[in-house]
Length: 145
Image (cartoon, rainbow, N blue to C red; front, side, top):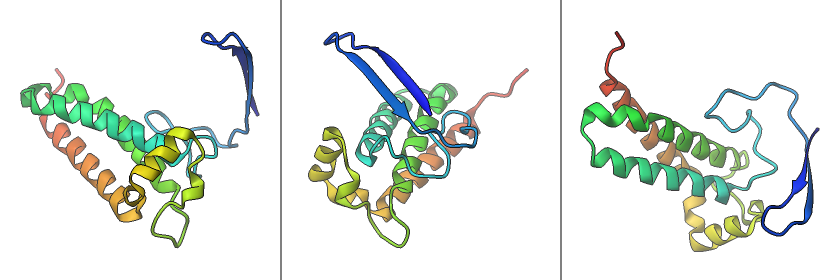
């Protein structure tokens, strides 16, 4: 169990959060968690992170020479980790994340605005395309001296 306490900087209220931790050591960054789906962050929030970070990084890639693409690799790896978390929330044997998996206001809004974006096949396309961009970046990384 991990316990976090403190005072909110915005409203001044005391806050207390308890999280049950997995027994295994968390994977190294940029991964967010182990093989189990998150019970804390909903898929809409992970999707927001993945899309926001990958969109910003890809816009930079379009406006930079290939020799600078390696500078955006970490951001895209982070976006990939977020998309992989979204996929974990598709229940086994189902083709999409059910509406009740969205628990935050941001996640519920994202789901209402595009429930089809949370189909397994589309999430896998986001993962595959991000992996391809990472592979293309890896081809441009300058050799180390």
